[in-house]
Every structure is written in C-alpha cells, then in structure tokens.
Amino acid sequence: MTHKKWIFAGLGVWMVMAAYAADAPKVVVSVNGVRLGSELMDVMLNNALAQGATDSAELRNQLRNELVTREVLAQEARKQGLDKDTAIKAQLALQQNVLLSDTLIAKQNEKVKPSEERLRAEYKRQADVLADAEEYQISHIVTATETEAKAVIKAAKEGAAFDKLASEKSINPSAKGGGNLGWLLTNQINPLFSNVLANMALGGVTALPIQTPDGWQVLKLVAKRKYKVPTFDESKQQVINAVMANDRAEYVQKLMKSAKVE
Image (tube, rainbow, N blue to C red):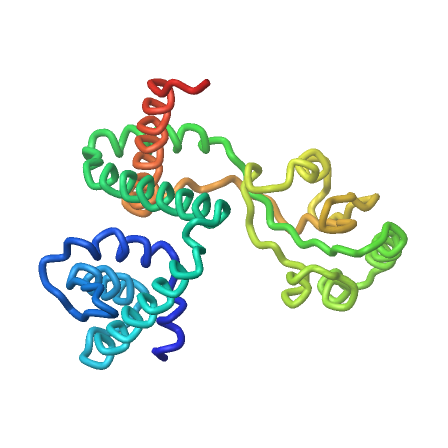
C-alpha cells in the first residue's frame, strides 16, 4: 500500500491520535517538540490491518511517516488559526460524536450474546410470517420515456424475446442479464409493482408501463412459487443479526427516552 494512500487515511483516525498524543506512555517520534506516542501507532496499525493490510516493518514505517506528516500539517493548520474556524470546530465535534457513538454501540454489541432459545424463538417468528409467502421471478425493462416503454410492450406482445428487448432497450444495469431480477419475495418488490404482479399471468407482460423515479418500467412475470423457508441452521447468522439489531434499537431508544431534549 502506498505512502500516499495512508496520508489520506481519514479524519476519524487522526482525531483518536490527537486525543492520545498528550499523555501517551511511550514516545514513537517527536515533531517540533510534540511527542507522539505508541498508542497513536497502535490505532493506525489496527485500522490498517482491519482494511486488509499485512503487518510488516514496511507498513509500520509507512504509518510512522504518516504520523509525522499529519502532525506537521496539523501544526501548520494551528499556526494559521484553522482550529479556531467555526465550521472546522463544528465538523470536529460531529466527527467526535460519530466516533464515540460508534464505539459505544460496538461495546454494547459485545455484551449481546443471545441464547439458543431466543434465537430459535426469533427464527420461529420469522418463519411464521413467511409461512404463506410467495416469491416471483421477474424480468424488467426500464426506458427513459413512456413512448419507448409502450413500444417495448408492443414488441413483446408481437413475439419479440423479452431478454433481447431488455439488452437492446433497457437503460437499467440489469439489461446485461436480459432484465432478469431473479426471485423476489413480495416485501422485496417495489410496492408499485405488487398489485400488478398479483394480477398477471405467468409469462405475461404488463399492459401499461409503470412510472418510477428510475424511469418507465415494463415487467414480465417469468415464474411464481411458494417460498421455501430456510432451516434454522441455514439462516442462523441472519437470525443472530436480527436479534442484535433489535437489541441495539432498544438500547438506543432507551437512551433517547431518558434524554432531555428541548
């Protein structure tokens, strides 16, 4: 990884470094009399490793160079009074709040260890909701104008292959795959499409184009089937994620309720 890339590693990391610079127990380097400690290097190294870097003497040297460069730039910024700028101070305060809140949530996550019983209860709840669910295999074509969409519908009804029309006429990235959107549950489908699909015959194409923010949509219902709920073991990680997300939301809501907001 190049030295230049590490130079622009991010404001959040630098704020952590700045917070610890004054009282770090072991000095890594001194820049114009400012002693920069080993805790700063630890933060930078951990961030680099989390991004996929491999610990090495070369990496540590790059990080040390970044540490020095950032300190030189920060010292010059303070000389020019940039740290007194109202907008900069506000941005730093926001970044600090983001860092603190993210750290708090991460620590809260470490405490969340849902039991097997709770996970199975959540799985059953989700499975019951999806017990009668259906999923649709859909293809679509998106055009910039209603006129173009109507022309596509006409061509499809006259026998033109829908996937060929999609590859030629659609402005959506799905055109590369012939407009295929794969299998989708009802709750994964744009609500604008749900009622239309429910009344379409298999292999049918929408009688009229549907206007959306992305353009004018023409749909084809390729197939329909009853949704097969995955087993507990197959979906266990998703269930864990759901339980943890619920716990996080409850934790945040509890703090919000106890806060005095005026």
